[in-house]
Image (cartoon, rainbow over all chains, first blue to last red; front, side, top):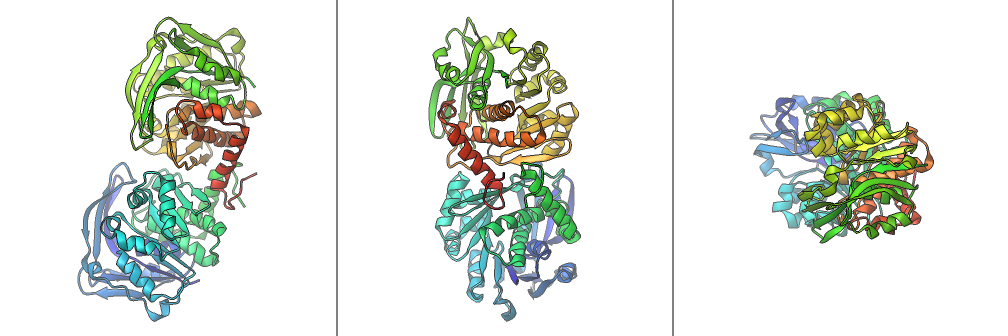
Length: 305
Length: 305
């Protein structure tokens, strides 16, 4: 089923304890699309500057990502430079240059407006609203956000919660948004603003999905090396939404499976820089990892059915 | 089946964001025994000073904890005073007064020496060795430890690893002991020293059990309020060993179940000060919480068999 994502397409420069990458393909929309494309065709809406090496997005197009909604504006592309030290859960931003992203006004192509599944990746809440104004009754709208918008656009963000079915955010953001150090209370507060589902991502500590009546937990995959955590959350969201769109099933039962597929994609994303590993893995790799995830929590050491 | 624990019996004074407790029953042996007594009779070996309010241990005796190995020495009891701030995963020790615990030489009563299951709670590694010298071929020997012994008694501790089947320790201790920030690598290093099982406790982030060939993960129970984290790890170990001793089954499959029982007991321990909640809960409470744990990771929202 059709899956639309609106997010950033950037150039990332990253330092980790294991190496450095300079001006590699990055951005929330990019990671999401690379991840979701393993499950379903993806429609990507975003903006790049005239300096963007668009040929590097060709592997995405080859995987079924429709780039016709990717606008090229005159000016510099969005660039992010960051560093991870030994605590790979914490990104230290060294530089953010918004470039053409600062003036971005998402225009959803007519052919994308009927998308059944919509993901509003981490962009300004006003732009997330603008996307919703342009699409017609999706079966599921999900969004992500970040600390910057919680600090500076809180009202717009809280109003957005009334327009989405699901939000993914990390534990620090959940605490910051709600003022509650306790994640269960934080999730309840967010649910009270509108979404039926809240997914709190805890990095290497896994992910929790809350509804008004239940909690589901998926561990993170125990990796011997987290090479570069950049994009893990967007890749999680891509796996989640990709699975939901592929199966076209918005039941809580299916969402639990989707959380595991999301966790699997997040675990691949961090194994190499940029979207490299996401482009490399195939269906067999994904199936094997999902099986490992199930075995990880199984009382019998075997996958759940 | 018979379960022996050797550990501390202390008086704790605790400050948390939710209240304070003054000179309440504490200690690794005490929490372990209170927890394990829900599954099997427990033999407790430890020492208290002549000032210890032993009548406060009567509820343990009433629950089947054999206190005949609890020595009373002349002098002051072991006292710990600590504080938790908003990060309830981190205890700040304000004062430790070892008292009679400083000169403790565990003497295992003759009637305890054939115990089939043995837990060496967090005490000096030399004392843990001394206990093993006094018992005859248990079916399972497990131990715990802490940062102090890793820093000051590293050689004795590593030598102990060659004499135990299982070790429980928290994530910070695993990293400190092995010098590896990665828990998978840390677990492998520990397994190489001898134990067949390593359980790494991550507080509110759950627990991981490693063997040479597998990893099992149990989440922590999402509690609305962690009232006082003191004793959670010892209560986990008590639930784990209590379940193993009750079922008298040392298979990996049964250990996975035991991790869930341990997690359940840890989640109760933190709901009130001291061992209060552990003494309060009954079999129905435990069964309900274990069911909740299974539902938390179930793809269908229902317990695993």
